[in-house]
Length: 496
Image (cartoon, rainbow, N blue to C red; front, side, top):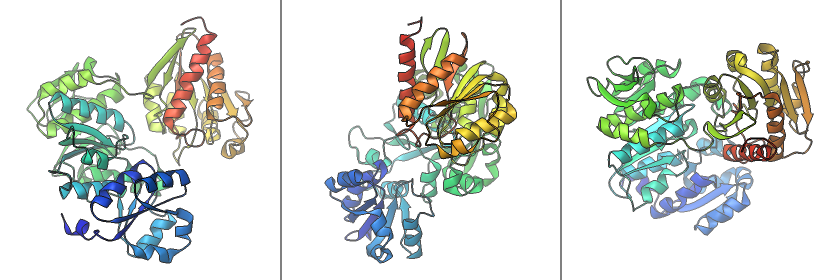
C-alpha cells in the first residue's frame, strides 16, 4: 500500500455527501483503517451511512464550526460539491487534502488494495458519455475481456473494484467534469473527450475551467478527441496523453478513425482496418456513429481486434431516455430523450427529425439556447415549455422563430419563467396555467398541448436541453413521466 493511503490508518476521514458515491467510499475507507464521518443535509441518507458503520454529522453544523474540521486528515468529496462550497473552501484553507471519490478509487486501485490494478478506459464529454461507455463495454465483452461499466453511469468505481465475481480487469469508466475536477491523479490507459459544449458553467465558473476538467481524460497512454466538435477537436495541442488520435464522421486520415462509405474504418491503430458497417450501429445517425467510433478507438488502444468491435457494436442497444421511442398516437411519433440535459444534446435529437413539436425546459445551468433555436427553427411545428428556465427558451424562440407556436406550462412557482415576459408576451405564445402541479402532472399537461400542435407524420420530442431537478427527481423520472403521459394519451387515440 502506498504511503498516502497508509497514513489514513487510524485517522479520521470526512466524506462530503451521503449519496451513492459517498456511501460507496465508506467500506473501502474502513478497509484502509480510517475512521469515517459522513456529512450531508439529508437525514435519511445519513441514516443509511450510519448503518454502514460511519459516524454522521449535519453539514450545516459542521460548516458553522470550522474548528471541527481540524480532526480530519482527508476530505473525500462527492462530485456535486463545487470547489467554492463552504465546506471545501474551509478544508482547503486548513490545508486538509481534498480528493474526489474517483481520486480515491484510482489510488486504491493503483495500490492493489483489491487485487492487481485494472486497465482504465475513460469516457467524458458533454454528450454521448453513457452511450459510448455502454458500447465500449459491449465491445470488451465481445473480446472476452472481464469488463464492467462504472463511474458516472451508475455503478461507483469503488464498488466495481471491490466486486470479486466476476472480476473486471478492464473498467469502462464514464466520468463527468465534476469527477475529473476532483481526480487529478487519474492516468487512464486510454481516454476520450467526445465533445464540449456549454454545460455546468455555474459549477465550474466558466467554460475554460470546464474544458480544463475534461482534459483530465487525456493524461494517459492514448488520448482520443472528437475532431468534428469545434472545441474538442482543438484539444490535440493541449492533450497530455503520450499519443493522441482523432475520430471523425468523414474519411479518416492517418491517426484517425472515421467513415469510408458505409464502413467504420480504423487508420490510427492499423493501416486501414474495417471495424463495422454503419447499419451495425444503434442508435443510428451522426451522434450514434461518433459514439461508436469513440468506443472503438478506446478498445483498439488496448489491442482489441476489429472483429470484437464489430460484434460488440452489433450487440449494443440504446438505453432508456436516450432518444427512445415510447409510442405512436394518431400518426404522431413520441420520442423520449430526457437524457438531453443541455442544448448540445438536444440539438442532435432535433436535427435527426424533419418536423418536431419540441417539449423543453428545466434548469439551463448557465447554458445559452439562442444558437440551438436559430438552427432548429425550420424544423419546429411548435414548442411546449415547462420548468424554471422555460422563459429563457421562450425568449429565444421569440427572437429566432417567431412563427413557431409556443405553449408555456405555468405551474405558478417557476420564478425565472414568470419573470421572463418581455419577449414572450406575443401572439405566438400561449400560457397554460397548471398552478401547484408537480413535475409528472405538469408533464401530462405538456404532452396534451404538444399533441394538439402535432400533425400526422410529425414527432413530439422530449429533448429538454436542461436539467430536471427543478421539477423531477432526475432525468429518468422526467422520461418516465413523459412515457406515462403518452400512454394516457394513447387511451384516447386511434392507434394502439
